[in-house]
Length: 228
Image (tube, rainbow, N blue to C red):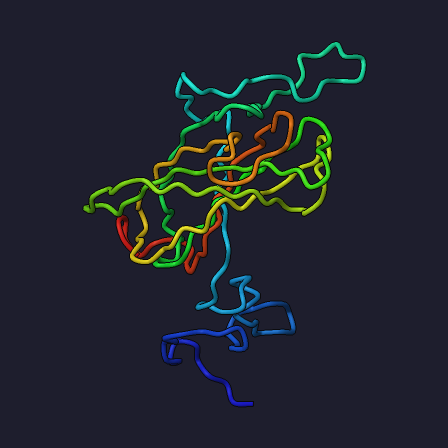
């Protein structure tokens, strides 16, 4: 096999996982696939990333606030315990938050909002909790319009609700058409306890574990400070 100087090899304009790069992997192997370096299938593949927003860091409005109360304590019942925000079964209670599309975000793709929550007691047969999101967003240099309200009353796993079990509700998939990195999304999360936007017939409090934002990423970051 003829020897080739790395310095004379042409610069690669694109790389896929099957390409072999000249790099020392071990004492006997002088090549390694790009996949092993990048830990992805190729440079053009899309990956999913997530942002978790902690309820404890979210702004309360001071009017329709959920109750902040104990979730679990130690067995002798002598500790302070851990706390959650509990959303009432009869009244619409709410929290406020916002987020920025990160530099890894694949521009123009949809953004998924999810709620992680827990029932206080077992639910009746077929009972559901309905979560709602009021939201508005804009790119830098663009104007904010009117808000949109979405309500979803399904949960995963799909079953009769079990006390203390971790459930996930995908509230809404926001269209990413025209969305750029750095866009700002302003949101109000609430429990649609009155059933205005969906069915909420779970007859007890629902505890909020967190808010998840899942998005597609096509890069480690942006090529400049302000744009992809």
